[in-house]
Image 1 (cartoon, rainbow, N blue to C red):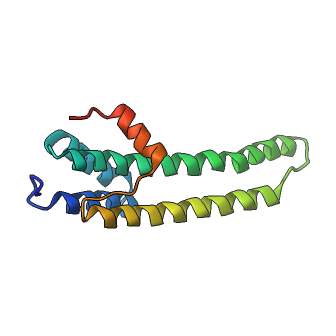
Image 2: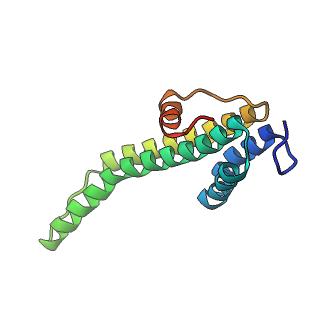
Length: 139
């Protein structure tokens, strides 16, 4: 099945996942907006939303976990006012490791989803698919 751009919907779906991986949010948002406004294929529309939700979910997870070293830094700043210091380097190192794992997992997941999209398939990710089902109007 072809999209209105003249390429297969599988290819367009794969491109959206890869743009989420390689180009960040600007290009991905433009593509998702295009698909939601102009494309009629239900699989493609769901894939567009899934690409965006996957990227946003990983970003949220990455930054929420990153709040822990930020909090330690704020406490250290308060201690610095009184000429002391506060640091828990092992926790910060663990958090940075976890952030590296999250970043790696996002890369692998987007590559797998992009590859599967080429044949109009997907990888079921229950929490993300549930969010999409709850908030996306089915046609």
